[in-house]
Image (cartoon, rainbow, N blue to C red; front, side):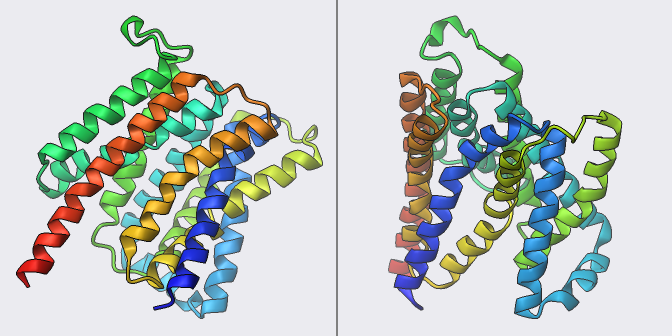
Length: 302
């Protein structure tokens, strides 16, 4: 294992993910969510196809798909099609700082979906993490006026929360999938692209007024939110003996993102967003403590 390489790859992935909320907002200034999904998916598919070619995995694309076509069709419809369409729409309705922060609660959603669909146990730490994280969501959505429960965009908040269900559901479906991960993600884009093109035809939004800046931003999203960064993150995890240390790097991403949103596009970061985000992150840390304890017990007993 190469720990320095793993750390460099992990930090690169986190830094790229830290920029995507800003890129989302820049892109959505010129693209509709459906247009953005379509172009970003095409860019991602091309990037992942090249990576598969360089790794000698092109022969796995068709064999993996036809081994279980309905399964991969379902995966592609969930992610990227439904997930990104919904999260892009949430970003168009909410400040990026709010949409991103709410989306970070997906790991808590995953815990409860795993209990329902995989029979995993919900422990005390999970309930505490749930209370902290979803209270943080309410703080963000109400701008700190928790008792009023008044949202600037109830639809935007609802879509951001729905995206966590879709993302968690996608990983639940992937739990026992032993196929090459990059190929699996590529298949999702290949499934989604025809549907996205069809949605574009139905929507009928114009393409002629999009500037070079818009095209550059959507290309960036396709490469560094939906494509290459996933490969960097997987490579980081494969090159380390300390998965927890690499995984914990992700907690820095939302805070770096807030700084970028404020400095690059001048978004006003409401104090309640920072408070709510801290609550969500504390909830995620509490949730991880459960796994650390479990891992310690299993090591000491072996």
